[in-house]
Image (cartoon, rainbow, N blue to C red):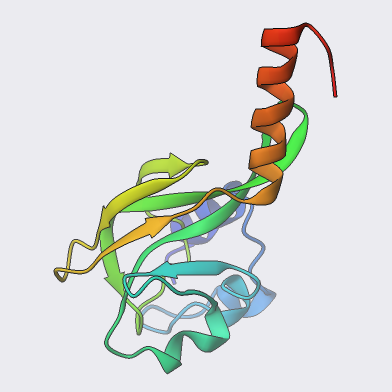
Length: 140
């Protein structure tokens, strides 16, 4: 593994195990993928260990925790290019868009599938709190 790649991974906050600095040609450890949830072109959201159950699907993006109006919410980070499930990204690839609310026609760039994303409870409550404050001048 190229030392520059290992340093970049650490800068991005991914903490690979110490055996990540392997000779050129060996794969990154799976520990860098554990805990991440991927959004597939079939509409399912799965963890790394379940990707093998969907061999004909593609990874459109992944779920990401972020702060919104002092509340931790989940957003869908859609990748610029969809990836095959047998090659999940260790380092987060370029993001096309981060979706918080409902979205339709999220296209896979590798197949004709098109899916939708629905707002999560945390994001919905954050939106309601924000609009209630803007419209009625009160905090929930």
